[in-house]
Image (tube, rainbow, N blue to C red):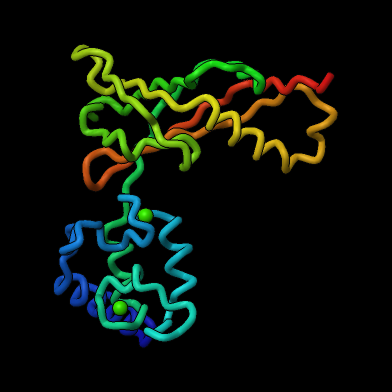
Length: 213
Ligand SMILES: [Ca+2]
Ligand SMILES: [Ca+2]
């Protein structure tokens, strides 16, 4: 065996040992998933970004983030990182249809509706409505399962004014905003399915931005 192979095998053995001595399955006394830095119920790139900021810091360091110290030993290192790998959230691809398909930014309607079709075999009743968000920020306010014939389909609604604010914010970064009246935008709907899965899907809508005057 070459030295390189030996090193790789040794590293795998250490990781396996570490993994076997940890509670890989999920929650600790404070009821969040180990690896979930921002405590949103998902272990994903958002957590990796936060974890990187605190990497190799110790209590007292300016970048020490106690939320990253899953091993609870006052230092952010591989013993904490391992939980992110072990409890990484699996995303299911959902089909999403957002209505209205054309949204006038001056409209006064109450809601934006999303129909979410989960992969077959996944039950919409396992979706935690409090975790369902549009573009990761706007919370869903209601979830309705369609019928027992289509257990993988549900409908959620979002505050239209919140969606319009989000779109205005997105458009404000576009230099060409003042020259155009309509845009095609992609919006994402995501949420948790049970304790270890999540869904993610997107749809495009047309945004009408009437010129002033
Ligand atoms: Ca998270
Ligand atoms: Ca630690």
